[in-house]
Amino acid sequence: MSEELSRDTRMEQLPEAEIKPKKGFSIVWLIPLLALVIGGWLVFKAWSEKGPVVTITLKSAEGLEAGKTKVKYKDVDIGQVEEIALSDDISKVIVKLQMQDGAESFMTDRTRFWVVRARVAAGKISGLGTIFSGAYIGIDPVKDGKPTLEFVGLEEPPLVTTDTPGRLFGLKAEGLGSLDIGSPVYYREIEVGQVVQYGFDESGRAVDIKIFIQAPHDRQVTGNTRFWNASGIDMSLNATGIKVDTQSLISIMLGGIAFDDGPDPLAAEPAPENTAFPLYANKDETAKENYTSQNYFLIYFNQSVRGLSVGSPVEFRGIKLGEVIDIHAVVDDKTRVFRIPVTVAIKPERIHGFGSAAKSTGNDLRDYVDRGFRAVLRSGNLVTGQLFVDLDFFPDDPPRDLTFEGTFPVIPSRATEIREITESIAEIVKKFEKIPLDEIGEDLHRTIRATTATMNRIDRLAGQFDAETVPAMTEALDSLRSTLADLEAGLGSDSPVNFQLREALGDFSEMTRSLRGLTDYLERHPESLIFGKKGDQP
Image (tube, rainbow, N blue to C red):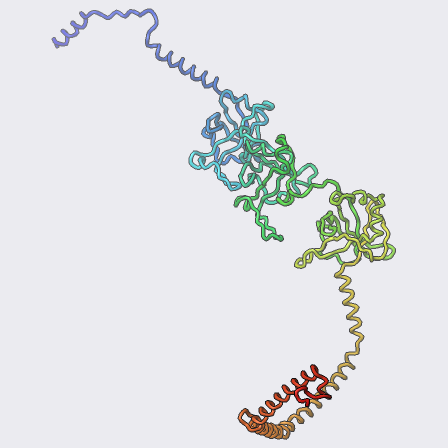
């Protein structure tokens, strides 16, 4: 108890602490103030470095994530996807992009956005890196244009961006064929460009194709350049053999376009960008002259035109002048006769001097018709039965007058040689039908029976000849053989007759020599016939 009292006493005796407030700023507040300044600076820096907010419209947001997907240009991050939402009609996707500071300089209506994913198209593979890193949004910035912050994203990445050196050119074709976006363009079997766009022209009857030629090969395109469709395999058979023409395996499968310098390439200047060229069907077509004018004619055929079609050639002695553009049948209301008018388009420039004849008011064509200018259907292919219109002169054809239907001259026609041959064969068949084949058959049957009886008699006579005549002839031959043997024995080299003949011949030779000597002497002394030899005179 005493101890507790003593402790309280000691506590009461201790002095109390005096608290005095410190005047001035405490160093402790520096830490939160510094943190506040740094945070504010970071906020200001982040706000000042932010670029514009861009809105793009896409059909699908496949592979995109808000807050993660980046916007890249040449693999450099220049923005990020901030928000992804559906449009009011839920048919499209609205994607908001937060761009970095400075991006507003190329936010124009010519700038393009698209989603970069792994793709396989036109024989090319792109975007394989996105398999592991994920899709991102690509951009093709263009500073020239009207400023805008709303864009429609491309469904396919552009094949050519604005920073790719080269130029665009246009091609006009009757059809697209096997060409597609990304189809290659070749120059001397080397790929130098590709197809970037196609569509119908203003008339809707032809196709406009946009191609991009990379630099420096774009300088090879001049006003004389010829483009042709190099798709597939071009195979032809002519007098020199089989010719196969193709650019590459890609052009066989996916199509392609090729071009060449054309005539006089050194004198031609490089063509300006977006120059339009015709696209020929193949390389051989580029060597043909491009005729611009053509005139129309009518030809009436009073026979079947099976095998003649629109596009069939019109030729004059093997030279193509034009082609058939229309075939139909008409009936005359008065005579109720069917006729087949064939409309042909002829390019008069193919024959010099024919242009004036093509005019409906010209006299040259009338003069040609008077001299037998006619149209004939001929077979162009015996296998397929294809026909073509052949124009030529037939002086023996009956005279015809040149007529007109509207502004179209009507070229007279004549029957084809095949039809004439068919008609001749028909006439021959008719004459053959008039032959009395039944009577001729009966006469021929009687003749055959008589001939059979005669042959039987000849056969019997031949049997008698073998039985009677042949043995007698054999005996006669044996007798003749014996006689010849006897003659040979009597006239042989050692026979007496032969020896006597040789002696007689010797005596005859001596007598001949004596006569020759007497003859010589008498020629020299003819008086000896009267007086005798001189040595014998007295």
